[in-house]
Length: 524
Image 1 (cartoon, rainbow, N blue to C red):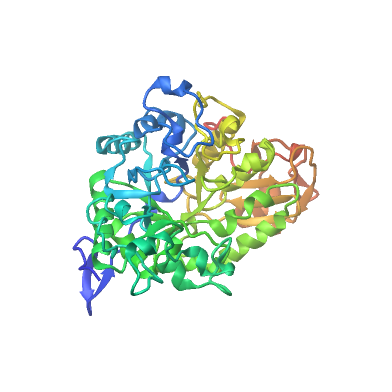
Image 2: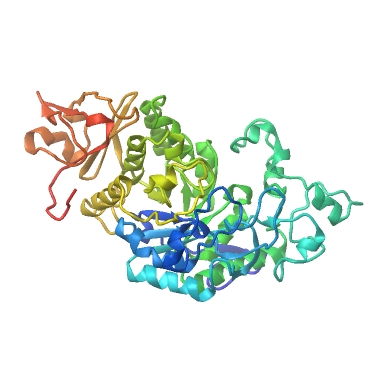
């Protein structure tokens, strides 16, 4: 164990670090736009009309300056936080069939910024420009591994303190006593050796070797040994450096599932910032354990892994209610710091998966942005020419920065969040959603002053459902005798209160949002 740094530890008890609390409250109510830096925007206006970068595993020219140039586009949709792909220096070689490190997840030197995306000054400038707009900056980070390594010669090309030819900075599980590092690197023990019950998502169940998950390599990506004192110190110093140098507001931690809890706890505290971890699993109790024991936030994979199917004509919204109630019963330390999303950079985009159904996507976005949790929207979701592509990492150019029905929908949803107290600083930013109805094709929930109805069967669906007002929470329970809510998003032909019942329906299966009170400043 490395020595505790003064800014990390408050005091020592029996030689164990007692860690300070991290203030995460400024993330409550934020809505986040996830920018895949290399594919979002180039540094000058001319780049908006370059040939589209699609299906290419190579650097395409998006930069930190490009993000700054398009920050008003993001802010104009109502987002008050951005998450950017890892900006640190990447390995510079072409790896077999996997291409280059354009994505940012193959580090070679954590303390440098990759010249493909910009400079240290550019990252400082991005933070400053976010601050001017009241936006928070989240930076993607990787502490589990570096880039792909196939020889000791490649190890030597890594940055200082990561390039030892002994390989002690890496896990070497399964290496024989008489085996050279060069030989081991050719076929390292990796997560695919951990057992068939680990896949497609790790569940700690059946034939799944936990030791291999933690101490094996991540495919051919050289797996960092956080129990090696020098490597651990390197990572802790680096995350402290990032926070101090760039004043980062939060971090997204890649492959958190593959690192030990004791390291994650120390790493989280060294960051002194909100950190949302990638723990890809269906297993709710396993997922929750990372929030309880190590990290301040988690991407909400136990829910979001199901959303593409549930928000389709073959899905069942009762299943979503069951999952959400299971999560509520699990009592996560702070459910408002769970990151909700419909798609990301690691799988097929929602719109392409749904054969271009904007209706399905609008419903998925309404749930994502109005249910409790941290809503995260992947770049280009609002542009069908981008999000209806088979390549989930296609570029935003040529010129995909105009207004669309989807960008207007997202802007409206962010407007509702702000005007009705669900956004940062709002009176209901930490209000829990309460599900009040579900059927095969509809889900209704109340959160604060809003009631939200979402559907999953596409255009043409008409279904009327009625609820006893007594089944509604709080002020909503007397709604039919005191006031009549306004439709603030979408359309419905059904009278809200009828024969003492609350009745809900939507036109053509589009999402509908009702509000308890009108706000003259909100224009939908």
